[in-house]
Amino acid sequence: TSFYEQYHSLEDIYYWINRTAQDNPNTIQTILLGSSFEKRPLYALKISLNSENKKALWIDCGIHAREWISPAFCLWFVQYSLAFYKQNQDITDILDNMDVYILPVMNPDGYLYTWTTNRMWRKSRSIHPSSYCVGVDLNRNFDANWCTEGASNDPCSEIYCGAFPESEPESEAVANFLRSKKDTIELYLSIHAYSQMLLFPYSCTLDEAQNHNELLEMAQDASRNIRRYYRNTYKYGAGAQTIYLAPGGSDDWAYNLGIKYSFTFELQDRGRYGFLLPPSHISQACNEALLAVKTIARRVIDKT
Ligand code: 0X9
Ligand code: ZN
Image 1 (tube, protein in one colour):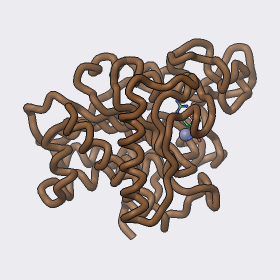
Image 2 (image 1 turned 90 degrees about the horizontal axis):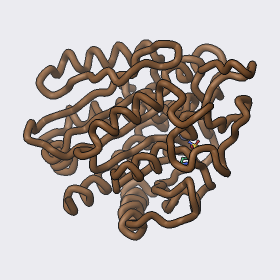
Image 3 (image 1 turned 120 degrees about the horizontal axis):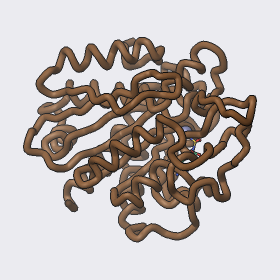
Image 4 (image 1 turned 90 degrees about the vertical axis):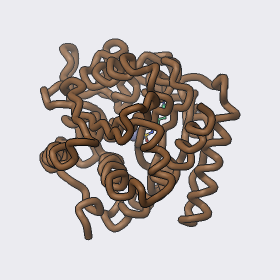
């Protein structure tokens, strides 16, 4: 099996980021977004094949530490882009029309902790002055109905929202970057696991987003394609209506910033292995997600 059909330690991922940028100096650039609580660098890769591009696609992976298929997808996507540009029509159209920013691991401290100490860790690894409990749920720390129903102000909770919006260096770094690029980024994607869902705003309220029907059609189209090509089922819908109310998420925040095409993908599986998805399933899980990215990006490009 190839490098991309395995899970990788944080150290290996940093090595891969460096190596990928070095080997592709004309197309790939690394961007240092900031650093984690434990002072690890947050590197994004920018894939740029057409210097005239004004539009961009953002993909982040690894917000939640234990969702190992998520960083695996970010690596998969970069590799696929480099290997299949000018070979596959869909990826060629994406890269001809958009720059792509990829953040392989938004929560490096948590990811490392799942490799060394606790495989089921979800949150970041920040310490709080008032509690012995560690970490913030980075997907509850953004400024979208922050810390209302569906999040917790208890530092010991798995869905702890943090002391204030963007209190965590990881979420602040991502929010700062997206703010600085909000006029070019047209499509925001956040990769999670598990449960096989294609979600869009809102999760922080039961209200419908202004372009709800458009988002619904995009997600439905992606879900249909996955069923047709991979015979697998992905539910789709607004987050709060499809899974649960969960405020402070990056997708809702990016949407309110003005990125009108904003999605959270929950990759494989539906609970058989859960977060412990075996490496033998990586390729199908990533191919399904890739097809969803292609389907949705195509529609965004055609509209804008
Ligand atoms: O609860 C979450 O943060 C995500 N599910 S997970 O099992 N990966 O933790 C869903 C996120 C949906 N979007 C928002 N809540 N904004
Ligand atoms: Zn998650």
